[in-house]
Image 1 (cartoon, rainbow, N blue to C red):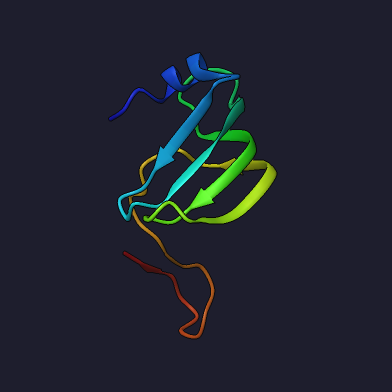
Image 2: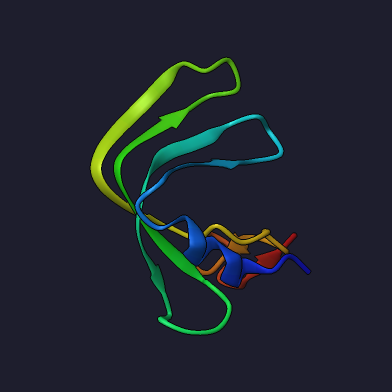
Length: 86
């Protein structure tokens, strides 16, 4: 498991969060949550969301995201009425 607490060392620096699809989020690391232990959420200022070709899809003055690995995803509510985990 990655050492997410090391992300705190990057506060005030421009960072890149990359995904397996090639998409990325680029921005200045403003804060990490929780304040101690493994980082679960980060807030980026002047954030750009880019596709795998580097095209900017969105920009945000402030954006909070989860920098952790995804272990699954699914519907919490939907047509079937039950969760479907992947």
